[in-house]
Image 1 (cartoon, rainbow, N blue to C red):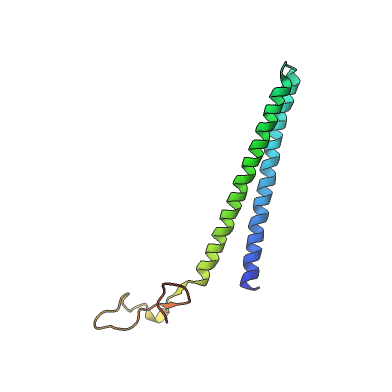
Image 2 (cartoon, rainbow, N blue to C red):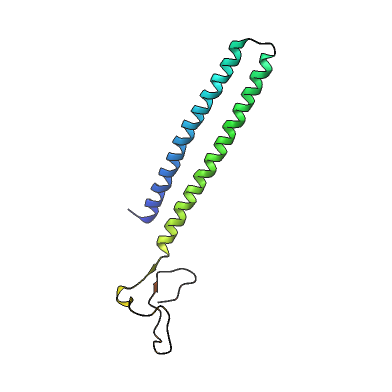
Length: 126
C-alpha cells in the first residue's frame, strides 16, 4: 500500500469515527429535549406554546453547537494525523556505527556530526 493510500485510509477512519460520535451525541441530545418538551406538553399550562418554542430554539442551538465542536475536533484530529505523517517523512536517522562519536565536532575530531538527514529544512546535508 502506498503512503498516500495509507494516509487516506487513516483520514477516512478518523472521519467515520467522528461521524459516528456526532450521530450518537445528536440522538442523545434530541432524546433529552424530546423528554423535556413532552413533559412540558403534559402539564397543559397556559403559555405552553411559547415555552415549547423556547425549548425547540434551545434544542436547535445546542445541536448546532455540538455539530460545530465535533467538526472542529475532527479537523484537529486529521491535522494531528497529518503532522504525524510528516514527522515520519522528515525524520532524522542516526547511524548505529556512529554512536560512540561525540555529539559535536571538536578541534581534534572535525568529522561531520553523526546524523544523516532524510530531507527537510534545517537538517545538515549528508
